[in-house]
Amino acid sequence: MVDRLLKPSKSQSYFLFGARGTGKTSLLEKIFKLEPIVGKNILYINLLDPDQEEIYLKTPNRLKDLIKERVLDLEYVIVDEIQKAPKLLDVIHFCIEKNKKIKFIMTGSSARKLKHGGANLLGGRAISHYLFPFTFIEAPNAHQLTDYLQWGGLPKHYEYAESIEKVRFLKSYVQTYLKQEIQLEQLVRNIVSFREFLDLAASSNTEIINYSNISNLSGVDEKTIARFYEILVDTLVGFFLEPYDKSVRQRQLQKPKFYLFDTGIQRQLTQMSDSKLVPGSSEFGRLFEQLIICECFRLNEYFETNYKFSYLRTKDGTEIDLIVQKPKNKIILIEIKSTSNVVEGDERHLLSLGADIKHQEKWIICTEVIARKTKNDVRILPWQAALKELFEISD
Image (cartoon, rainbow, N blue to C red; front, side, top):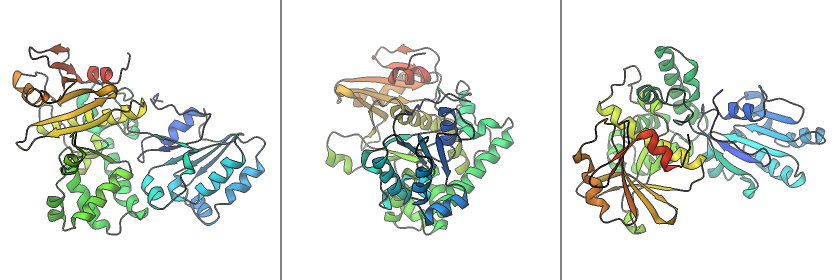
């Protein structure tokens, strides 16, 4: 079993959020050294089981009775997919107050249903952790960049040896989760419009969101498009990269970029998973950018570094792919290039925009194999080495 970077404490209650298929249950099985999760000191409730979901939707107080029955030996209560029975959180809140010894672990693939449904999020009595697809540190094939980009980092696909099996898995994931589960969770009323939007969102992945253009292509108004994007963010299958600007007002005038959470899912949504990914192609470059940005968000969460990420684009189209704001006002300006041979012209945006930003370093993250520095003081870094340095990860 892959050793995950996220290591929640067994001494406190917590939420474990993550998109479906990121390995939340497997992680808990490893933490509690039980497979499946059963044991004398653990009560496990799986709300993906339709029978259990129905029981706890109708009678959430049943949990009190089960805890009371085992109060002497019970140490942990684990509830899988808590968003399917959000009223259970009121019962859990009561039980936490009544018995400090018992720790509650609640997994979920949709924070939206909890937040927007007015669910009790336990008032700080449980912290929140997030689990993502495998990072480059965790993924068995991360050293094979093309494969890593082509198939993504969802744990399940590593169980399959053949490409056709991996393609079938990605197709199934998109069909059963991204398109059907979201409807079952009643997050959208018009599933046809949402599916059309999802294809358009995938096509514009890594780009600045053009709400008007997507609205025109899908026939859905801009407010609905904005809500659809929020659903993707709240269900943890995508995130925004906000524009950089010292002025809050200026930042509000600009639009964010959007990134899907996994390159394999991105390829499936754009109907490219059946084709071989070619290094040097425009698709390879976009997926490489997506990977680097996704890794930054994942590692920032796991290592609790509290970095702030943004991008910068001027009116004339000059752009810096990623700006990392570290504590104490240290700023790193990053261009992301999938090339294995960075040339002088690749520095131009960093040099033209960097002069206006204080306390900054200039990096180009690429696929070269040896780190170096140009005559303009721009650091050229292999992508894995860059991420390790950025997050102070030792070998």
